[in-house]
Image (cartoon, rainbow, N blue to C red; front, side):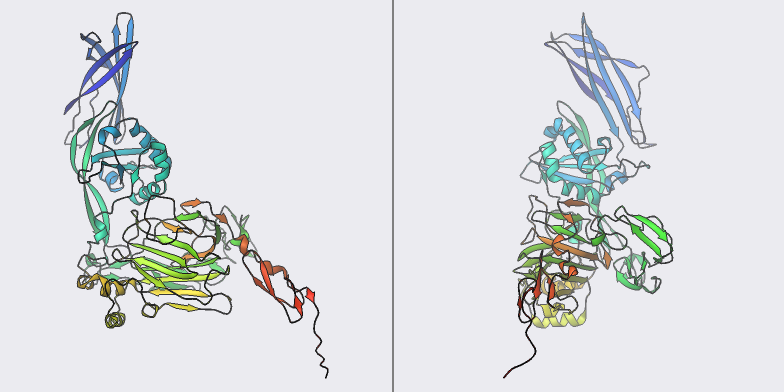
Amino acid sequence: MEGNFWSVAHESSLTWTCVLQFRIANPISNKFIYLPTPAQPTQRVQCTGPDGGEYKTRSKQKGKPSHNITIHQIKTELHYGINEVSAQCQLIVQHVTDAMMFNSATLRLQRMTAVTFLSPIFEDFVEGLAAIIPCPKENIFIFSIQEDNTSEERILNVSFSAKPADARHPETFFSSQYLQERVYLGRAILARLTHVHVLPFEDNLCVREPCINFEQCLSVLKFGNASNFISSDMYFFRSIIPINTFACRCPPGFTGMKHKYECDTEVNLCYSSPCLNGGTCVRREGGFSCLCKEGFTGIKCEVDLLNSTCHTGLCHGGSQCVSTNSGISCKNCSSETWSSVMCELRARSFERGTYLTFPALRQRHRLSISMKFATQERHALLLYNGRYNDEHDFISLEIINAQLVFFFSLGGHVSQVPTFVTGGVSDGQWHTAQVTYFNRNEEKKKNILKRASFPRSVSSVPAELLGLAAHSPSKLKAESVVFYLGFLSFERISWGGAECSDFIQSCYRFLDLTGPLQIGGLPALQSDFQVQNKYFVGCIMDLYVDNQLVDLNSYVANNGTTTGCPQKIGFCHSYPCKNGGTCFEGWGSFYCSCPTGFIAKDCSDGKKLSSVAYL
């Protein structure tokens, strides 16, 4: 194909417009688009002077090829008497590969056209993406710019991929999930740097769950066609037109009973008893978790802390592994009071507007979450995980009127599971909440739900139908709320319709969470989160996902939370209660239960009554 470059050169008040003819070849043999290097280092260029006359000058061209990109620097020089002017342009020919499109993200820019985008906004946008991902701006590849003709608003779809700075293989790119996560968290920064408003991600074809049985749907971009050139005063851009489609795959931990591709059976990976040294194996989606006995650690409880030697990755939080005659220990742990023996941070404090961000909970079939929390707030948000557009599937654990409520949706209706704890959970004491999700089709529960005959508009699930329990262990001296949920069974019978009982029909069947897991609050985004509360003030401790402790220092982003929980430092350790008083931990303090005859905060005022009685 052939095209033109317009180089505009200025000298004093004179303007010269030069047109450079170029040709790009696309040989079928290697499917690579390139600009052939001319035989001569310079070539003639036709220019129009300020007086309307035509002049001939020379253009110098220099190519810089690499594996999948060629950069050509083209400089035009014009001599007119004693005057000399020049202009320079850059031609970048990018080879768009399947790996690049598969690992890409498409952003929707509000009130934007292609011509407007091909201005200084383009360079600012690339630099903004490089800042929030982060990576060098040379590793940002924008390969598609398409105006959305289906929307009444002016929306521009911009597709890009990005390569890590330390990528050694030319086909190594950040995953789509990672790019979406970084853009989701950095939308406000991107808007501030580029003055461009990025709309929430659109849900793709996978939101309707088109795959059968336990297959997982993957959104895929494929090459469709090449568009015409888009030109502006600064850029000359040829976009590809990608096709949005999907692919179905059988995820790890699943197979087919008769044929592997059917993906209709979950494999019990605990069957082979993989846990060592007396560890207990617990099934989780796509794998297993080992509950180790005291003195053992590791994925399979293979590390004996009394008889092993140090190895990489054993200690966390910047601590150093030390081997002694008494075993392994982690030294120089910065927050030892609030850390595990392997220096994994167990607790953090939250104020209004602070939160932690972790990668999305990708489990669709079975999931277990537990945490301890302490707060005096009657309304708060403990955790939230949804989709990037904050619609359809989500889970949230909230405190409403001092009681825990669990909200969830598989893509259709929003359901809530309330619980009741005597006195509530907003007393500043430690409380434990556990949510167990198991996507099963249990005949007994189906019959119960059928007899209950809930209307389609029902939004509250009775606790007795979902096995919700609340109890008060005497050792903890604080209520512990446990949710045992069979989400799928309920939604299938009550809301999903007959098609949801057939695994080969498209239906809201699984929990599909794509957005990041937010702990203790939500970012200040222009989004309508499906929650009643957005903040938490207090402490969160011992967060477990699928029976594995989550290091609270392993976050994707920390927005203002602090290490530990000073309000629950443990005031009773110093035995502050006098005269036999019993100490109880409070919120940032303690209180004493004093024997008869003694008063004051520490039971120090009063007199012990005599046990002798007089008539």
